[in-house]
Image 1 (cartoon, one colour):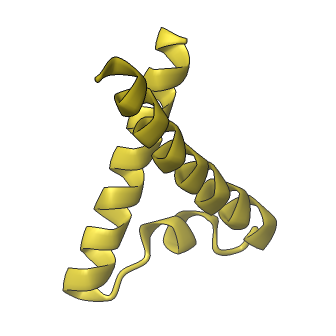
Image 2 (cartoon, rainbow, N blue to C red; image 1 turned 45 degrees about the horizontal axis):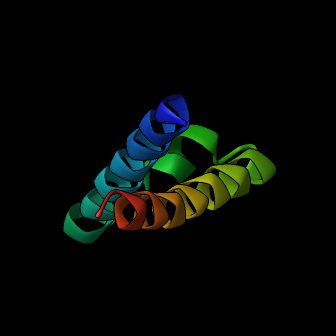
Length: 63
């Protein structure tokens, strides 16, 4: 489970950086990298969302 938590943490950080760049500059980093592959882009967004949910449950279990 520790490896899964690290992967989730990295994906949440990537999502946070993407939202920060979008909010500040209107730049969507995921789209810039995977824009020519919309299915991959969608998978990245889904994985970031699932990672956020995982982090919530992981934190609740540790509390």
